[in-house]
Image (tube, rainbow, N blue to C red; front, side, top):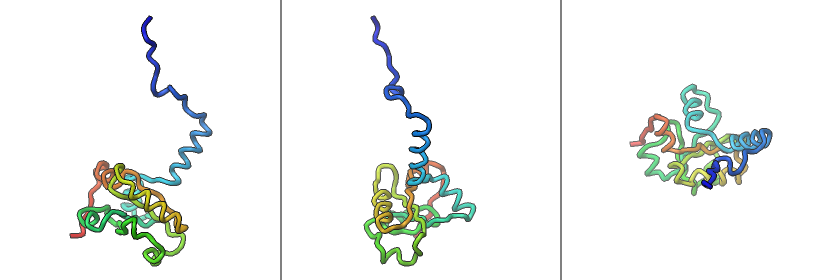
Length: 136
């Protein structure tokens, strides 16, 4: 008797729709993507401060237009004092292979600041075909 080929995708059945909707809505509360950030920057309607949380050297080599450089290890109340309470931050790092944006988002959240992570980071930005700018 031949082996029965079982779908790896359906090895665990999908969640029921209400649970799936709650899960994905929750993810969008934590993350945004490069396209949405680009759209808001291009239309002049960003309601957030975009933080490049990589090193100053990497920031100077190329960053998302409009981003402010604040390495994740330097996120503290003093360095955020120019931003009013309630200011939303979007943090990004190099990309999926880097957890700097997660560290930054954690630090911002622990300081009571609204935050989302831009998934994809610099690599995602470039994959979308968007240009970086340099500080040199």
